[in-house]
View 1 (cartoon, rainbow, N blue to C red):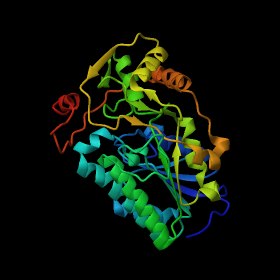
View 2 (view 1 turned 90 degrees about the vertical axis):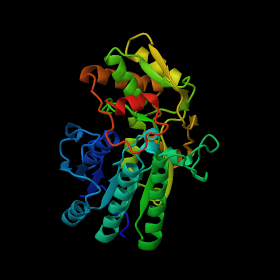
View 3 (view 1 turned 45 degrees about the vertical axis):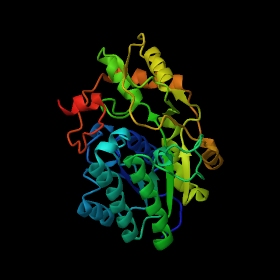
View 4 (view 1 turned 180 degrees about the vertical axis):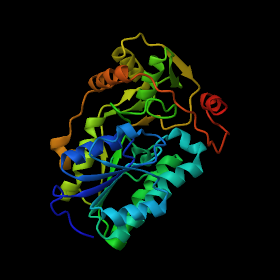
Length: 345
């Protein structure tokens, strides 16, 4: 595989999941850097209008091996930014086949194509802190991953495969483990993921915000500008090659605190509905010393209130989205009652 030669000059990059949330922002960052961008998305969770002008949009799936190979042959990509995934971590227990097909096997298709193409200088992969499971807090990159749900298992398997592909074929990679990313352009209509978007969408529909359990679960919620610029710039940092980085916000908040923050930004009184607790990792937040060392000039740490306010301003102008229930539930046992009700609609 080649080295990182002048990545700002006439580079051609593939961005998967480009019509999704983080993908659209990474596309914009790359276009601003002068890249030719091919934006691949099957629109299962994103929207074509999200793809920024200047990117060449291709509607298709990373599981379409013939299409993937055709794109690599036609465009001879210098870089791959792989963001396509269905990131409903809690739901992944109940959609195992779908999860592994889309989040693991689809990724392997891209890795195979990158190796076979012989032109890819770096494969940038967005993993997740879901790989850590219930490890000690804060989660650090040197902790041994122990994922506890199929989503985290799939992400970690791709990480391991990239390491193997580097050792066997010389494919360079950079892996990021973002967490709880939010901001403008997010799909607020998905009822299974993106809690801030779910809260805002419910408020727009004059419905109570729903919380699993007592809302004491803690997460560090990461504004999009804390994540996308770092991902896009990683190919410029030689020291980042073949490394794993946590990326996102430092300060954890409870989901209950988050709900109150969202209500304030949406200018309503908090209206909360508590649902039965689900089986999930209760506390999940990570340390970011490593990413600060390599990308310190890009680390912004937008405060939660400020980021939520910015997203709320955007949501108020775009309006609510009618989320669609997942139609391919594979296991109904222990499915949270609220999700079971959706599945029966």
